[in-house]
Image (cartoon, rainbow, N blue to C red; front, side):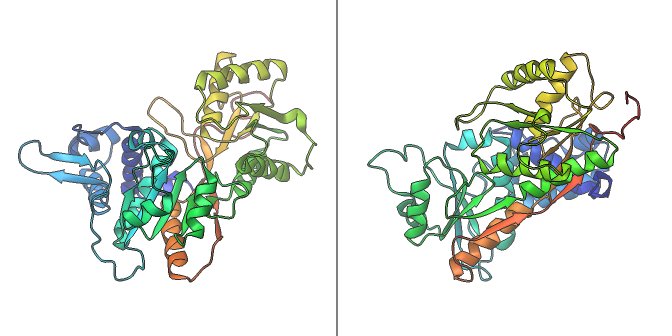
Length: 381
């Protein structure tokens, strides 16, 4: 799937969703007017209008009239919405579970974009989608997740991030369907919708090989037991035709081993600079994700090398792109697919059409960006 094959309005809509997830249009700061957005994005006003109309229909933004008029991001994104038409669904309200509060969710781009996708699909199906207030949920006096779901009228829960897996299992055993959105599930017997990390890593590595690079390095993290870490490394090895343990001279491991959330970007850059100084990488690099890809590119730039003139970099998943940053070539899930499949699976579990645990792996396609070129073009051999 190439970028040029995506309709213009869909590109504008995706850009707006990323800006919303960054928090650029929060609180009383409205989305810019149509003509201003059209000039900024070099798009026709009608193209911008269609993108905004879809976001309004999906409940992501609301239009205000009179004093303070404009287009604003809905603060709790349909937390107080009522279903428009729930006749086709056994679920009237779907609850979103996140380990932290609403502001922390909004500051986490990957989780928040997933939230927006699910919210949009719920709106399309006439299902109310609510962010559950879990602040203080670890207190002994706090209600369990199952009790909270029943209290708020949620027939199923979707998990964006949650650090206490036992509670998820207890909720499922209490008869509340639980669907994990994303790859953080490990060996839990929970239903999930996740990108096919093995296939995505294979596709990104194969893409670099097809460009004519005979050797492709991988930058992974140190969480060896994490499923996403293992699957993406396995996909990379499979594309290279190597067994576990073979080609370790091409593998760079960076980042923290612990499961604590986040890591300062500069820590990754510093580690990679040290690794690249000790073991110079080949011209093609497959990065575990967009954050690692960005860190690898910055590390190489600080060492006097550029991308893609000296190194081609591809990764799995999307990472926020802005005007001053190149668009990474990456293996990505189709826009909207996670939201669509999460809601569909939750409905199937709630209706009894499927039993838990059930898993859905979403295929990935290569989206060409600015960080790759054919071997031998504009650089060394």
